[in-house]
Image (cartoon, rainbow, N blue to C red; front, side, top):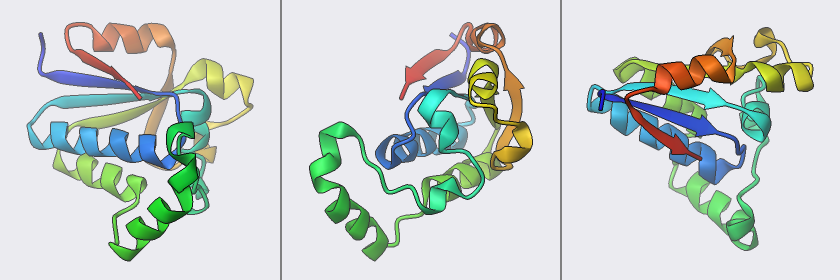
Length: 137
């Protein structure tokens, strides 16, 4: 198995985004190559400035969303986007937007945060992921 991790992010909830960014950061610190494939609702979270207003947590945690977000703010937990940017400074971390989702939702690369490097199809992602660990978030 190659020293790389591929993350498929199909959720745009804060808890999943934080998990993705934290995993990417840890893997980058361990000198692993990281690629993140963002699709469906995960892609919507990468629209420019969407992170500033996204306070949504997964269904499992929705009853605690207000408390959780308040606790993170009080403890000054960095945003998922800041954590992801830090991971990119540490190591080889790339974010790819799903081409099909981009077409479906009429989103252009320039509509997304600058951390998204390109638009790829699932075939390209699978080919790049071969031989490494794949995580679904």
